[in-house]
Length: 434
Image 1 (cartoon, rainbow, N blue to C red):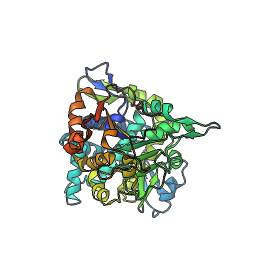
Image 2 (image 1 turned 120 degrees about the vertical axis):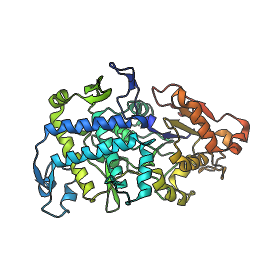
Image 3 (image 1 turned 60 degrees about the vertical axis):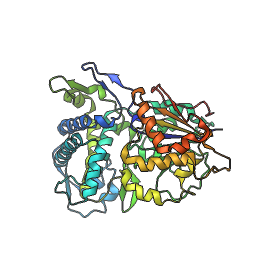
C-alpha cells in the first residue's frame, strides 16, 4: 500500500475563493495568500480600533491577571516581578502602531519574507523600532487574529472525514501512511482533527497529537513509517518559547477561534479597501472579543517584556540546522524517502525556501540511496508527484520543481513524474491510497 506525503503552502489554507458582491475582486473567507497580507493587516488594525470600544481603559496588576480565570499565562505572570501593571488601551495602541508599520513595510517589499530577511540581516543594528523578533511576534499575533476573524479552510475537514478511521468506543485512528510537511504557520490541521475527537482547545489537541507533531529539529525518528506525522517547518502559531522550551497556548476554539465573522467585513467603495462593520461586531461579539483581547494583550505584553519569544521560524533560521541533521535517522528524510507519492498543495516554491525544498525533493526521490526504510527498492520511476495549484500557476511551479529535481533525475526511467490536479475544491487523495 502506498505511503503519501503532503507538502503544504499558503494555498492549502486559503479556502475556496468567492466573488465579493461589491467588487469584481475575489476574496476568501479563510487565511490570506502572500499578496493579500497588507489588506488583511489593515483589517486587523480596524478590528483593534473597533475592539477598544469593548474594553475598559484600566491598569491591571499582573498579580491580578495571574489569578484571573481568563488568563492563559497565569503561571508565567506569577514568576514576573510584582508591581507591573498592564494597561489594555496602551497595549492596543502599541499593537496598532506596529501593525501599521508592518503593513507599510510589507507593501514596500516583494513579500513579508523579504522584509523579515532584511531585518534578520540587520540584526539589532537597525535604527527602526520594528526589530526582527518583534516582526515575528506580530506574525504570530496576526495569524491568531486571522483565526479569530475568519473560518478555517473546510477542505481539511473533508480530508480527515475521508481518511480518519473509527475503531469504536470513540477511538479515532489518524490516517496511516500519511505525512504532512507544512510550510504554513496556521493551526488548521490541529483544529480540523479536534472536530472529530471532541477536543475543544488548542493545548489539549496538541497534547493528544504530541507524538504525531514535530518540528524539523527532531533528531531521531523511532516511530513506524506508517504512523501519521505532521512536520512543521516554520513553527506553529498559538504557542511560544519560554526558557528555551515550546509551550502551546490554551485557546478555547469555541470562544477564541473560527467565529466566521467575515460576513461582517464590508467593502468600502470610496477607499477601495475592506473594512469592519463596527456596529455589527459590537452587537454580536462584544463578550467574545473581550475574552480574546484579554488573551491577545497578555501575550503581547509578555512579548514586549521579552519574557517569551515567538514560535515563528523562517527558512534561513532553520537552514544551517537543517543541513547538519543526520539524514539516516531524521524524521523528515525518513518519511520522504519511504513515500511513494508526494502531493503538493498550494505551494509555489519561493526562492527563500529553495535550498530546503531541493533537499525535500531529493529525499523523496532518494537519489543517494535506492532503498527505503522497509528495505524495498524505490527507484525514481516508482515515484509520483501530484501538483494541486491554480491552473494559471501550474507551468511555472512545475518548472521550479523540475529545476530542483535536476535533469539527471528527470532522465531516469524517461517517465512523466509530475501530474496536475485541476480541481481545488478538495485536497487530492490519490487512488493509490486505500
